[in-house]
Length: 306
Image 1 (cartoon, rainbow, N blue to C red):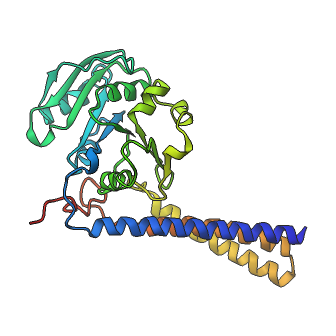
Image 2 (cartoon, one colour):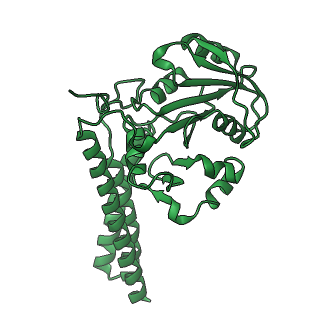
Image 3 (cartoon, helix red, strand yellow):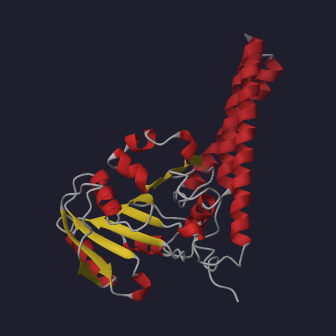
């Protein structure tokens, strides 16, 4: 039993170190993208991304989503003007929205749409505001997908703020594969992110677990890096994890002195997982916030340089 527990502890430590290496490589790729000051806004192979918003009613969150300078990119927000009349009026006035004809498509059946609006301001032309009777978040996302102009769809919910280079990082990853080969990009580090191809959503009849199950594994890609701003209580969580790590270290030391190898093996396994968790959060730690209380530090990454 002792040998088996030590073997399991060794496997856990090896898996934790492997995960740490994968996360570190993802951080290095992101740093490389950030340092490429000559990157332009041209889309490789016409890759376009549509942000689909449900429950988003805060102008600060919309400003964050609109801050990307990538050209083939749009933000589609779905809001119920009857349930949130004040927020809808504020958004319509802030972005000078005007009514346009809603898209009619049989690919994704949508109900409850009252109107579709676009901004008259040139700097917000890629913003679309849909007035729809809210039933479920999946219904809002389906309505936004029906109005989307691009092939890749990224659902965003209330309180989720994108890191400033997230769209460029996703496009760079999609550009490494033949056109439309990838149907799913996922990241579970931090707030989960799921980027889906439009054809996968149509084949599944909408959003939900079924949309993920219908995608073959060779068309999926997992990215071990965060794409959303970390929660505000991250520092407190890291502090608690540090205290837990010191406690485990004390248990290992006491068990070693007493000769309890089983407790040592279990403690080392827990310590390995906890250490990787702390290290991954520190690897992608962002600089202090400069816009809306969230980190926006790489504004000039996607500008033309002559």
